[in-house]
Length: 140
Image (tube, rainbow, N blue to C red; front, side, top):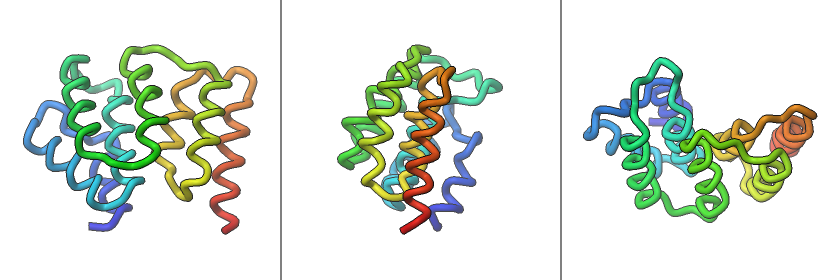
């Protein structure tokens, strides 16, 4: 399965309440690529509004994801994901700081999205940083 195929499989379709399938997807994402692994984290910390998943289940999934994924960005992105799970926004400055730490890891779109969506960007500064990182990745 390619990264794109995997992302299409889990995007807004993560099986939060199916323990076996959720575990399989966590492991598969981490085996495919870092971006696929962070897509799973993106789904864990941003369940669709239509989902009835409870926070305790999300925390179990987060713990499982944390055990399965080994990447330098985990240290930067995990606190942001935890804030999102707790329905806490981070400041735009913190989101920008995290996005800048993600930037050297080319094409980590899922990790970048987690940082971007974690803040209320009323001034457009986080949006500008997000776009700047995307633009740099598309140049090289």
